[in-house]
Length: 98
Image (cartoon, rainbow, N blue to C red; front, side):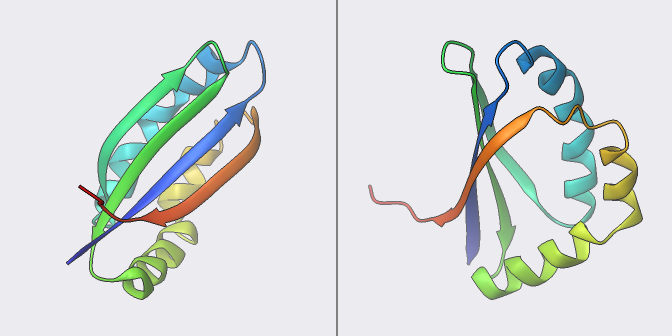
């Protein structure tokens, strides 16, 4: 069993390039904790960034590993250079329907 988390961010107008320059530094750190990046898309017209990450196990296990990842020094190091341009986030767990 795997669990997929869908994440959608609204980015400050004019700041997408800053975010996209930073984002690739995040994926390897998530991978260290067993997360797999499924896709990442930028919608430049609407200033949104949507991506999905997957981890083995159920939602409770995902949350447990994510809490460990969120508290990690590796994540903290990546966020030292975060461009702080996200205005809102929508984060939730999704399931396939087709």
